Image (cartoon, rainbow, N blue to C red; front, side, top):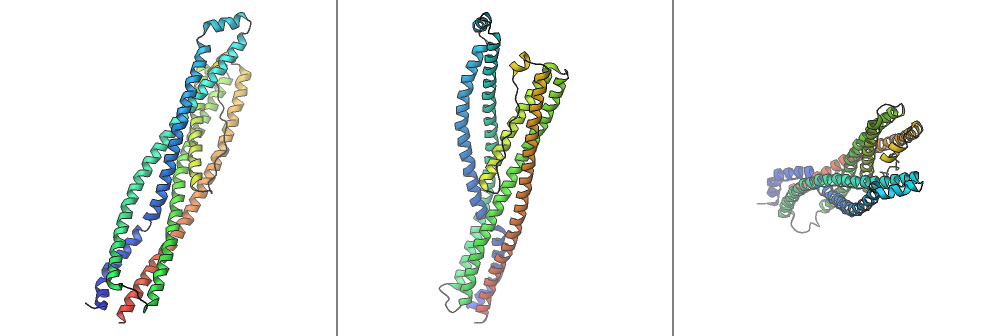
Length: 347
């Protein structure tokens, strides 16, 4: 069979392979980025494990100190006899707060670990899907190479135009890989920021609930129930904010265009002060702290929404760039194929 006949015979298979390659070109650079994302998640999980071990030790120590004052009748009596009842209450309140803070910190770390585990599970699943597509792409490329080798084996110094177009295809393919990698990063950032935005909304809901409970407490309604509900909503809001910060920090490691949020000091109360020093003045003072925390959270929520919108705009720009590069790559491949067809048709 003549070279010309080989070209004609292979035309249909060549067109099919080019189309298959175009459909799967995205997979290799996306898989490379996915591996980097998984490594980052595993590093964060390892750091979280170390943090949890430290926090567990702190909680155990603080519990002992808290129980020492809570359950010590002798120590309580000694302070009372010495006329230092208020000092005892102050010390007991301090120990209770430190224990509560330790428990809360450990709880937040466990919540962060659960989020990281879920993200890793999703990332591993997506990695497997990409590996399947990459395997398909490699198979298509191997078949195309074999097809071309069967026709263009050896150097072709008499076909300089064909060699030149091969170089153009290689250059545009490199640009396509970079554009695909950029889009993959921006899409991943949007996914993470969406999760952060959900957690932020939940934090704001709980802050609004805490503010309402605080208003009830100030006017004398609700009693201990209002205090308990207020503390619960504030604790949940703080936990949600920790998740928000963890997610945004994770996104910022993927791109310098994403900036970590400012820390918001979520107001926290403690049982001892609520019971022993509960009055209209303390209630009003704490209500103002809750309002200040709420304002800070709303500012960072606006910041997060702005960063999410910016990421969506970058993703759209990256997608347009990828589409343009993809069209050029398809055109370059088709031009190379046309040159090869024309070269052998002229023989």
